[in-house]
Length: 347
Image (cartoon, rainbow, N blue to C red; front, side, top):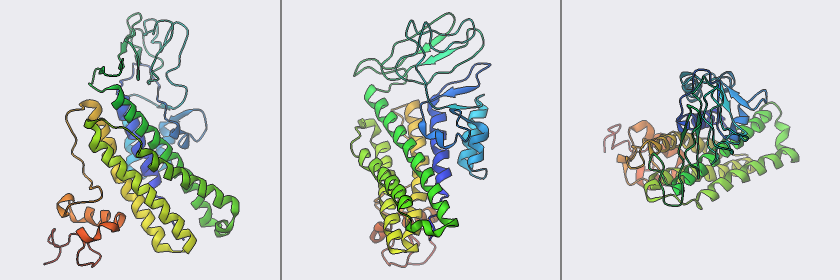
């Protein structure tokens, strides 16, 4: 039995792109790494030094477009990697320093847990604050303002509630990546040693990871997006629903030794990665202008009709992930979705 793990590096790549895009910072002349509290990057950090370097990011899947695009984005911004722990917690008389003129955050460094860039040429250092924070300046450096108070809005018009929602989704996305990577490792072991399927310790590890994955889906139901974030939230709920259903299929497929059910699990998780691309785009667009909206590419369950799909091929990918939508998209039950609508077959 096989669960195809192609979706794993794709998830990592999408998550990395989201982190890169949401940083919204340009490095100074000598910046080497950017810091972002993103613990899922530990899955990429092969030498365990606390930094996901460009080489490590590229090595996860050399042929994966999403991962390579994430690495290209980092390189294009002048970074050599991402420090993923210990961010936003400098003390003493300064936050991030930029040579002789870097910005300082009074006596407390950067507040609000945002991402900060360390290093830089004279007068070029920056601090970025998140959560509740105040403008910080020092020397010739500058600070960026976070939101203050329940109703106040930051420079981009994002409220504290909305930022909390974004942070929660990114945290769950990071956990999703860590779990996906661990699941891939366990099932890769089975490919070389099928007896592990009967191993109690191996099965316990799988059960724990799958339970954690389902918990992400449950947690998604408790989030509180703003009115402006409802479409983003609909995509996130569709993603987590596919995770939930995919886990059920993995469990059933293993118990029943049914390859078809495991294939369906893979199809669900593969479509989930497409929705993650949309989610990342939606989050970035929201950060840029929360009132502008975003044109999503991929349909979410349930669709009203075949006009929900950009083309015939995407309709088939959706159908493989959501066979539950058969009455709407495959009324003749021939296994093909929207073939008449797209002119593949005559009515």
